[in-house]
Image 1 (cartoon, rainbow, N blue to C red):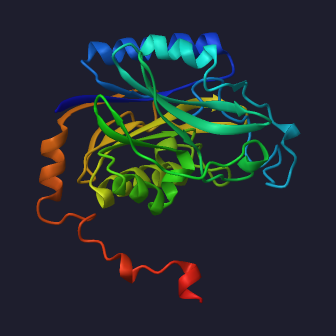
Image 2: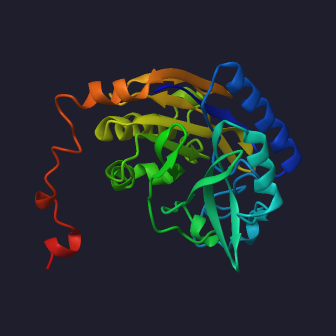
Length: 288
């Protein structure tokens, strides 16, 4: 199957109407490029937190010092509006999910027919747990473009997360982020920022070690005290960057033959096949 995949680096704040306008524009650009999949950033509906670790950077600081995104129901009209906009396009995006008295940092995959998959962010950096409850699973799901997995931002710093999705059959992994520049000793040139370099390294490593196609979207611009590094990209299953927005807002677009790409990458050294789980004890077993 030949696929055209787009990943966006774009600004999304609190204004939902502005978000719908941006989403509509990115959908139109993706369709014009013949796209089948569009990956939008974390917190595309309602924006991310205005600060990490409280206003002073202390993870123990109460969340009251930050502005919070609107909490939206998974089956609510706000998500439904994006589903309608998606039409025949497979689309992923993030938002703050309300579930009873808990909030989750959530991503969904949709088409115009409805929800295809849901992921709640598992790994929470720098006091994010003061605003959100944590998810507890990484699960792949079937879509019109093939079997997919999703993760959100800091999730990609943990090799086990992408590996769990690959073992569940994911051929394409969409990673949606609101990844900022370093909070201390930041670089004037965003391309040289150390957190930007980590962002890019994780994208390439997770694609290569699991031999999957990796679509990475990120917020761009400034929000509250955060400056986002952009860096939306498509990575092939050999870890090679096929398209990249750099530190600017934009759309990274790449076309590939999914089956052929995976077959070529996995023909000789197939990492999932060649694993040795018996040699990887869990910490609990190692210290028993």
